[in-house]
Image (cartoon, rainbow, N blue to C red; front, side, top):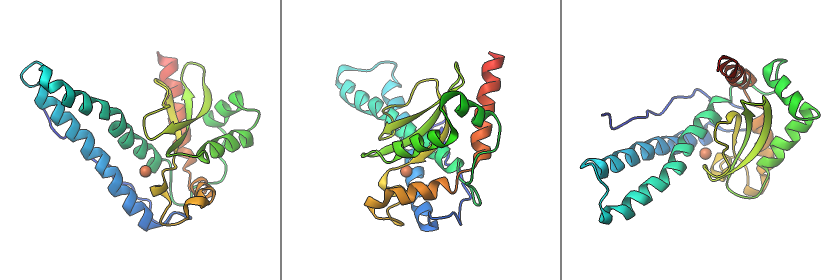
Length: 208
Ligand SMILES: [Fe+2]
């Protein structure tokens, strides 16, 4: 059995608009921390399970480690979605296609979807704004995710993921200037990736 199940991915994002390379470097390091923590949790849980049972005295440690899986796993995966949906020379409006159609089925207009998505990102607290696709209905809904793990909907597919933890922008903007960071994020969105995530989900649900 392999111990290091996950490897940190590499993202080439230098030269974004309004999000400095310095911020990204620091953010990649944080992300690598989540990958390491996820692997470590697996290894430690595996050690407890190695003799085929969880003894009563092991239960507190086992429980604590298992409870942390949601935090570390989502911390790892959401950062991969986040870095993966930005690019140099991104931004603008999404091209016509599955994503625009799905938004059109779910909101009165693209502009209103965008107002909702960016307003979720302005909510007080530490977390994420995520546009999810419900693969069963083909509808898009925007969700506030507290920390990394509270509010994700099982089976829904993240299409566009924005980190609004303060570490995502504190080197570039003051805490009170989160709206400026949100604007910068939107100016770097890779809409082709969002479109691909939407199309992949649509064809998988047709095949099911
Ligand atoms: Fe982050």
